[in-house]
Image (cartoon, rainbow, N blue to C red):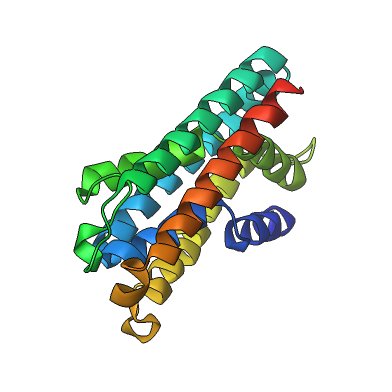
Length: 202
């Protein structure tokens, strides 16, 4: 189980679309919207975690067509986010910036869809469960891993929100800059196109 937790910590703390979106939302809109995205990312992540714990993720991963469909849908969603970001008017204040609106529900949905439509999240959770569960493990071990990772994820992602919403990072200046906007457009569009191409090559 400790090995499984270590694999999760490395994956959750490493730069990726989920924590990148959490960080950029915290910079653009502040802590509460950042926590809304965090809730969406974690809800999607725990969905895949539970499916992996009961073995359904392995079944899904063994179906190339299903994984391809998830990947293409995720890629298209990222390209759509890039377009929404590009169409956003330049913002002078953090409250005016946001790729999915400023509502908490919109930020939650953005975090959820980025994570639920990521095929690598499926594979990642299969790896985490496989690392922590042995043939003679008690029945509750997979669920204990899921709950433990829930706590770890809450700590890691909340730290991202608190760090990137800090006034020390001159949040308003960064959020209102054209460079920040176009960097987001590039990351979302390139990630989306790569995900589509990678899924079609399966």
